[in-house]
Length: 441
Image: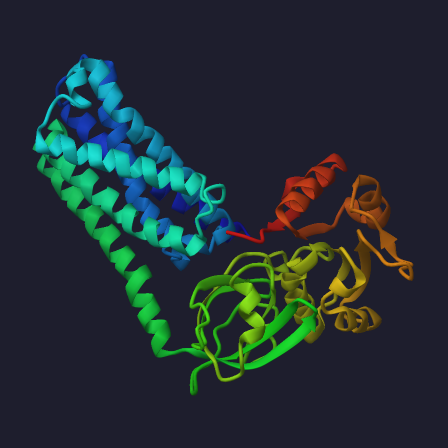
């Protein structure tokens, strides 16, 4: 764990140094004008924002060197926030330049071509950010948004580079020109690797669907076998992968991330257990053995193996959030790891419980020491178990003395996760003993 902390810290330092590098170069040469604060601030914001945009490509490229210490659950939200920061800096840039002495004609009055390049980049960025923030209210499908984002993002970077190259006094420095070309080359290589090289490589070595198992009325498990002669990739229990199903028959070919529900100890295959809850996932029952799939992984840090010091685990799952827990529990069972586990599993109805029989069998075994408590919010008349929602009183009663020393794992719908997080904090469980997994990236 200490080694992971060192890796995380080193990557953060490198990230900050790269953002500051052009500012350090410009400051070292004392380029004019030195006495116009707002003008110079506008220049500095643009330089920093350009590097942030370049590094956005690296954050989105699923590079193991970047992702592994943090997990995509942290990397992707950070990518989103830094995109908003870069947009804010660039949106402020022309106004500060105009206010600081450049004149308001910079905004619309000057028809110099490279200023129009900057304006087009500025407008494209504004549209890009607006669609990202309000995609759902606008009814824009994720795949359509991602295609547009994959085009507009590189376009903004190229337009910003051309604009800064010809419009900024900073690019009288040869070192700045070299740095900008290097940054653009880095972004180009990473974009090509993520969007073209990796998909082409996966298509040459597709996995095959070998079984489709119905778990409940709306949940199915897909079982994948690696290409002939190729070993299945190694993964930690609780990790996830990106899957693109190639089924033909008019079915959609979209990439989605799904938890790996099988145990790493089960050699030769992978499984993902998927709930039919959207346009794409509603087509999962139409998947057939013999279909192929492109699988990239593993990703994520939601695994008991990353917390070897924790002997007592409290796992709280909501609905299909059981999938990373079944992977962890299967691994604990298969490796006969002696840990004490309490699983609180919340569903609406009894028929919604996934892996119920297998969980009962695990609880009846000796390794791990597992206790399963089902909580139903809309139980039928025969139900004799826990009812209602997981509020603070129920968590306090069901977890008992585990609140003081156990490691808590949460995988639930977003609203439920946030509610449970506040409940645990209210019960004096420190954040360092709470691990979260989100349904969506």
